[in-house]
Amino acid sequence: MRKIRCMLAVMAMAIGTGVAYAGEGNSEKDYRPYPHMFFGLNGGAQVSFTHYDFSKLITPSYGVSFGAYFNPVIGARLHVSGYENKGGIKSLNETYDFNTVTGSADLLLNVTNMFRSDKDRVFNLILLGGVGLAGAWDNDDFHALAAKAAENYPMAWQDRRLSHNVRLGMQLDFNIAKHFGLNLELAANNRADRINSKTTDRNDWAATASLGLIFKFGQKKTEKIAEEPVPVAEEWATRTDTVWYDDITYRDVPEKVTYEDNIYYKIRLSEPDPASKIQKIADFVKAHKNCSVQVTAYADKATGTPELNMQYSKERAEKVVAALVKAGVSRSVITSEYKGDTVQPFAENDKNRVAIVKVTGEGVKKEQVKTKKYRLKETRYRVK
Image (cartoon, rainbow, N blue to C red; front, side, top):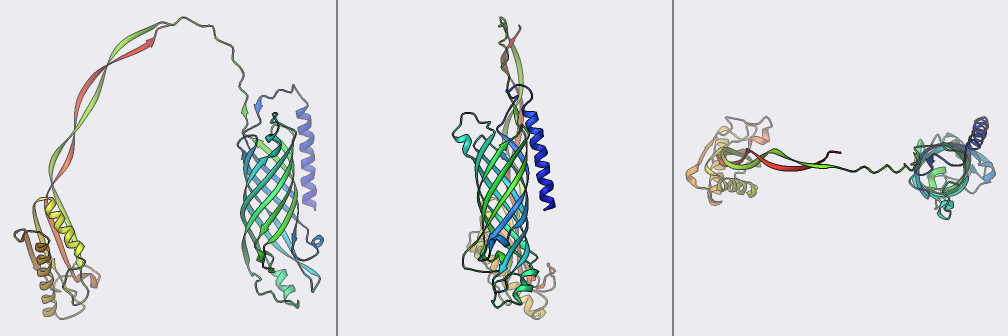
């Protein structure tokens, strides 16, 4: 209650300052009231409707908001509020406390400005609606009471609880001055059924009422009508400029190209798989000139014997060569060898059951050629 009294005192001082400011000078403003941004602080009370005497469930609530009005009618804000919440257990006729905080993105609709030509009114009726999240924690009070209650609460949460929050409400806004405003906000919040640890198979509702102090900023200055300048006779002339530029063309330049792929095998297998790798290698050879293909096959050292592994690597090399020929690669450009388990190209054992295919050939790349050229450009310029 002490915090609420302090906030009300600050609001009262702001009203007095704003009214005094509004009474000075002429009624014409040197700024446009919309669009603008705002920052707000509010404090009040909230109550949950949860099958208990709601007059015993009223708790303080504090909030902060940041937002903007994009035009005289439509605005939006981010709003965070909370502090304490209460619930009650009927069989014990006792209440329990837990902490809550709610964050939401709200749409603001200034109903007054929808029907008034003067968009800078002292009083405004604003409807609001939004969605967000509600969090709850510190549920020790509930569990202490539930242990003594006749009812069972199997859905009660322990450390913390997160819920959706749907807000609908209204504001009575008092426009004090350029940078300050006050509002009275009434809102209803829809939250998940378990937020208060009790379940009724439908969502819970909570109502809030708060007074808020708003600081507005970002208004644009009004544009004063400038006096018409005296027309002056204009004189123009033309000049011819030489503009140099790079004319860019491209030419084909041969280059060495390489392609490498690894064909891995399961243990004791020598058939190349997948076939798509063979086809990719064949396509590369067909697309480039003067290609040479080197096939080197291996076997892993951790399985089999040296003699058996040499045979496996030989079969793998021969079958890769056969598959490449079948895919359209000339046998004359292919060389092959097999190493058995005498060489292990990879640190990981299973990867050494492999046939490594390396292709080298000739390709073509585009090389940029720049040629300096110029053009004449006529430019008109003002002399007087």
